[in-house]
Image (cartoon, rainbow, N blue to C red):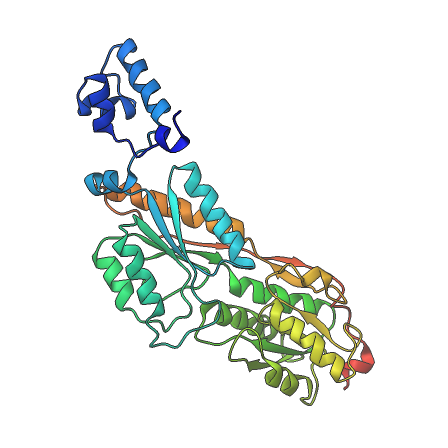
Length: 356
């Protein structure tokens, strides 16, 4: 009796051709969908292929064609980023591409870290057709970016922008999000505002900070903003304490992201401040826990699935141009506007709080 292993062995095109007494090239053409044989012979080949469980060797095919139909993805794969990966996966799958996923750090690594360089090399060694990357921050070494560029491997950057202009970028319009946050608080009557900003070496932090500060400045001299920069997007207890104990104390605070906003809840409670009566809080990201905080967090909602989907679509366009030896498409910079989601953590300013 044949076992499943006997039936589905590592049979190749040459063995199929030998069993039917035809040439290997004919088998290859039939499997490629070309009408190179009689209907009877074509049927025999396809039936035998199905019976033997033949699968094409994509590695060999990629070496011969220079097209492996694989895309390397270097990105954290949890929380917000998992939805980006979801969008990338769906777009690539529809096009018949596979994805090599490498997790890089969600937090920032040291500027001289070689970890991302190792990730890039592992993907280059596997002959991926392109790379989609979320860099840890702006100061990562340019050496491996240059290497990828010189090798002609297409790269698309997501979420955090980097200096070289020859890479496509897909992410959120962080500056617009910061402006939306400030305008929301100003419309509620807040005039003494605070901001816990993320590290300045990250483009997302800079965009949100500049957007928030510019909107407050545009409002006029009756509004002010105290910004304190945190070293990361969480674990900002020292900076939050400094902001909430400043004089005058802000009546509303914009956090660099929802994680920092959640920290503000904890520290505000330890100081006896009620949200939103004594302190309005607005975050950025609309992470899964945001509506479950007490009170639910007002925040800026991003569109991670669309970021991933559009990044993959850009990559496929670049790969198609490369393999057809056409001029590279124009470098694209796609930014999605975040959406303000108003919940219970913001309210109109209380006159007694304004004078604190």
